[in-house]
Figure 1: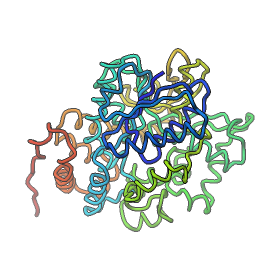
Figure 2 (figure 1 turned 90 degrees about the horizontal axis):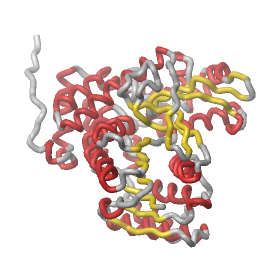
Figure 3 (figure 1 turned 45 degrees about the horizontal axis):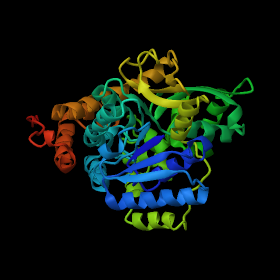
Figure 4 (figure 1 turned 180 degrees about the horizontal axis):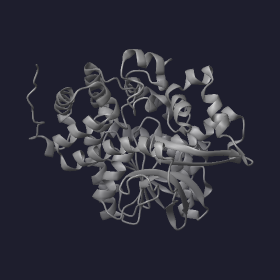
Amino acid sequence: MKIVIIGAGSLVFSSRLTADLLSYPKLQKAHFALVDTDIERLDYAGKIVAQICRHGGYGDVTWSLHHDREDALPDADFVISSILVGGFEAIESEIDLPKSFGVCQAIGDTLTPGGIMRCLRTLPVQAAIAQDVMRLCPNAWLLNYTNPMAMLCWGMFRAAPGIKLVGLCHSVQGTTTEWAERLKVPMSEVDFRCAGINHQAWITRFAHQGRDLLPEIRRLAETPSLWQQDTSRMEYIKHFGYAVTEASGHNSEYSPWFRKTPEAIDRYCPGGGWNGAPGFIKTLYNRPDWRDTMQKMVDWETPVDLVRSQEYGAQIIHALVTGEPEIIYGNVMNNHLIDNLPAEACVEVACRVDAAGVTPQPFGDLPEHLAAINRTQINVQQLAMLAASESEPERVFQAMAMDPLTSAILSLDEIRQLTGQLLQAHAPYLPEAWHAKTLAAKPVFYH
């Protein structure tokens, strides 16, 4: 069995996923083909895998290092993609430029100007990966962990028809486990339903031993202590009645309600950090100490935890290999899985995984007001995906204009100006097809 990890030089994720996979005895004879464009990070990744195998006693595991994914992909059974295109400099510009216009993002990797620009520079690479998989290992499953999840998966399905692809996140299992802990019930005994889009899926059932716990969730959401810790998500429950996935920092960006003024940010993002600190993503990616961090993992001074985590990737591969079924939450094309979201959208739903493959489970209708909130994101996702696929500046402007946060703060003239500056700042990170293109200027009139 051959598992290809593209983006293997990541600081934490690649080693976490490798340890998860090897925690299953049936996967302990796999070959790992590690791929990264950064040779130094790739070398560290190989040394960390060696330490995982040594300390886990996985003597039958083999691995190889590849600078070019085309060398790694032939005969692959599974391909995992977790990449960052552009690095910290690109992230810094897509956070700081909008901030200079008054658009204050916390994470900016899913929607908002940051998510749109990340899509522009990342989708061409992800689409090429999907096409390479179809050409070099067409029977392989491609597991995508790269953000912006919905935009990228949508574009990859279009670029490589027939691809066996599922997008993976940890927000559903993280949020449901969090609520089980708050409610003091074992997660293993919780019966729940959840559906929507990535980073904005809705928990529509949460029960323990037949007891509906949604009323208790709604009660807790209105307690001051929990509200302070997880503010914008509690606001959603307070006003809309259902818990939403992903942290409040993300959630605060996806609507016009929480970040339109400095006063609103102070109110709805208290404590900063994952609760919505302005520019919080920069503290996550600005890691000048990355060599020291990876060296400590190589030296086992900072050991990789060999206990399996909640990430779905290893569960999926184990279920596909052994036929032992799992239920996971994956990002797939809708095709009427959620009846009141667009059929062509990328949605997050329960999927059964076994020897037959990854089978999304139809959900039916979301409560209509929740579907309406999802649709405001889907509009932006589709326009950004088309902008990246077509290398079209006007599409970028259209996506920015439809973004709930940006449109709550800026006029159309201001959004056009911001879009032009972002495209100029990102020129070094965009494909050659963008190089001769600029966003058309429009006259600005005053009384």
